[in-house]
Image (cartoon, rainbow, N blue to C red; front, side):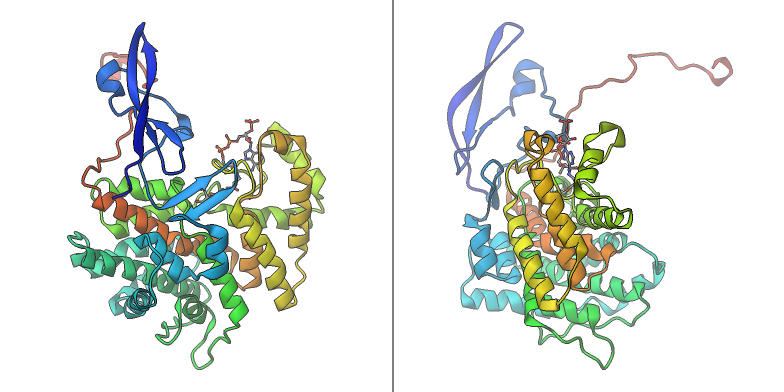
Length: 434
Ligand code: SDX
């Protein structure tokens, strides 16, 4: 159960001349909200907030973001410290369970991920049903939902032990499914997980080993991808996480909720932006469009263009994840001896945008997706798998949010209201009279 935020003063709303009081809810970091849960019953009014930019859908104890200050914390720990000191699996444990694990707890958690890393052997035949050209996000969402077909006892989770198994199977097998879908897309045989390898190393093994020739695991490369997963582990009530909570609120199982989250993440305005950034940079280079020239195209509303990887609903300052990823871009490319003109162009774009009034006035800064694709490509991850990487990284956050809904005795089904703008009542017209 999330720590109930304290309640203090009241908000007074005057509607049709009558005052109405509503409680003020205050969060751990003193963020304030007006609790309008009694608004309709006491006034007949609802609120309207297109895109939920001003609406809190829940209380949650998992992640805190201060968009104005560029702060991101997992369960109170600053992302900068987690990124420097931790690993993806440890961060996943923290996000899901609320505390940093002891050595023993981490060993047990890691052991469960190893225990459940294999997909059911029958399950692998599902891959045969997809065309080679199938988008890996379509495969991932379908296959994650289908996990429950092989473990029906994990559809209705009744206790923490069943949750622990379902969470471990999902977190571990999302990696296996992703790697299997990649292998299918390039016509290579699937490579089974190696129980001797840790999470991210095992994923790279499944992605890039071939029968009788194991992929050579470079510790810096493994660390770079592990860090990317870690930086994506959770991010408050973003589009895909809210989707997971929406589906979870109906009582749907963890796998169905995560599959819905994968679908929401796919969009280019959300997790699909890491692909869109590379496509934007590639197009600029191919058409010899410079940074300033491209920004002018973005600023012209007739072009309906966005600077992909820039802007954020919450961050009106630097996305702390972007700073860390940008540093690692330089390290990974230097380590691999790669000179990537798209990285140079991205840095030019960032510098130009940050000095441009259009972006300054709108508080548009680079977000997590602006540089992540540069690293993913340097690691050999194919472009259409970039958002799959985001989904693997975000899985702990989705699991943690699903658990908050599942464990909340006061949880209600998400069912927003609307303002109807369609035709007023009218009578049916027989077809011969239309
Ligand atoms: C992620 O929510 C999360 O936490 C998401 C995420 C996570 O970890 O889960 O952080 C991951 O999804 C990051 C965002 C990835 N998406 C992109 O990089 C796509 C490009 N960005 C934009 O589409 C946009 O910034 C959004 C979708 C991210 C946010 O959109 P908002 O909050 O609805 O902002 P808005 O459309 O209201 O923009 C306000 C103004 C508008 O201009 P005006 O109408 O005032 O003239 O800023 C402009 C927008 O046109 N604007 C941009 C822009 N983003 C906003 N103009 C140019 N380029 C952009 N990228």
